[in-house]
Length: 159
Image 1 (cartoon, one colour):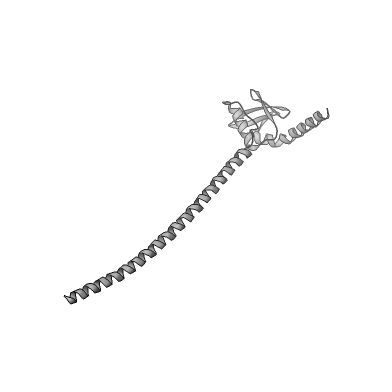
Image 2: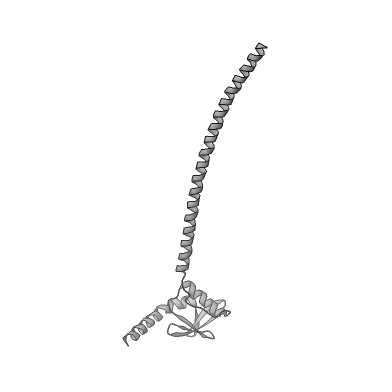
């Protein structure tokens, strides 16, 4: 019986030793969990900061897009293919010469009356006995019309 008691005591001592080791291991794991939770809180704070920066930048971009969106230079009649083509071209390229719709294909291009139509799917302007595509017409006559406009504006200021 004494031998059996000694074995039990040895087992108890062994279990106490294992309990101490396991307790230390649990403490180490608890410390590790605490460090990971601290890291997680820091990462979440950084993420929140980054999300706020993204939101700020997106709002800035949206505001700049709205501010920098050019005003339409020409608004044509809805449903009129000629007006829509001319409007799209003028608004996309930013033609400096004011254009006004007169009706039936006629427009005022600065101080010059022009006739426009769609020919073979292209927007063309009547010039002399033929037609010029809009790109060629603008590049050929825009500067001349702008000079006329400046001259007329200067003349009006003097009066």
